[in-house]
Amino acid sequence: MKKALPVFCLVAVLFAVPLYAQVAEEMTAVGETMAKERRALLEREMKLTDKEAGPFWELYEQFTNDRREVVDRWIKLIYQYEQSFDSIAEVEAKTMLDEMVAIEMDDLKLKKRYITEFQKILSAKKTVRFFQINNKVDNIILFDLAGKVPLMKP
Image (cartoon, rainbow, N blue to C red):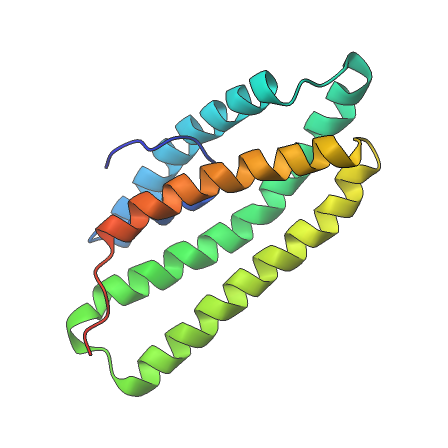
């Protein structure tokens, strides 16, 4: 599995592969590498003051830990899709669609909650900058993932 740009992070772990054990193993390795790369990118691009740095990194760790649940749900959904790709029934497709929307909504709720928390320690501009960087990294990962996960058969 190729290493995309950073991230935890998280959604990076969204690569579809044949075995769940392999997904978990690769997710851990890729996730750790991407987490380091994401952090290095944030260290370089956030331009934090000494006063902001400590509280920011503490809150950032909480944010990434809370987001892991969302990422784990994505991985589980992708694995489920990959396992039944050739034989997905209409009811199963509907269930997957509902879960996809629920995951996205939960991720947005989490981000909204953390926006408020980040604004307690950063200016609005720096909070926007953080979420821009974070979203760009997530989008790079999602773009890579889009090339790996086949479209549902009609």
